Length: 213
View: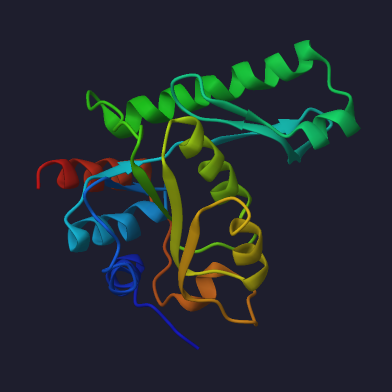
């Protein structure tokens, strides 16, 4: 079974699987928090820009873990019509959830980027990176948000993912690149020697460092 020393090690090893990607219009997007140090190593290895992709799930009012949609920056919204149809959520109830999550999204964007503008994805290839993918729900939402932001192509890359998540993501992204996808998958942390929790300050430090290179 593959093991990574930490997220930086995982990012460097993942980058070896991505070396042949065309880089002219490539933007690496880390999923905060854990995906950012992995994405940083990928961006450095490939010599391409790094940003974060901020996604907030819109959970059903009666069942918050079930997504009725997702939102991204600049007013982007994707809706899960199937879930909405089954749940019969009113427009006002949907709006309340969206308003709450947009405020969280705004604060996180302000915290992570400071005065830096979001990198445009229009006509570009978005390479979405996380430190591991168990179910794929957040990564799937990130794919939809990236397309809604105008990405011409979306690729998901991660050091480790469950086979089930990979299968689901292949229905959302143009490509899914995984360093390893073991049949026995209990938790992402089982594949890392150091899987410590990151803080917002850690994310800000990494993004600031990337912008200076």
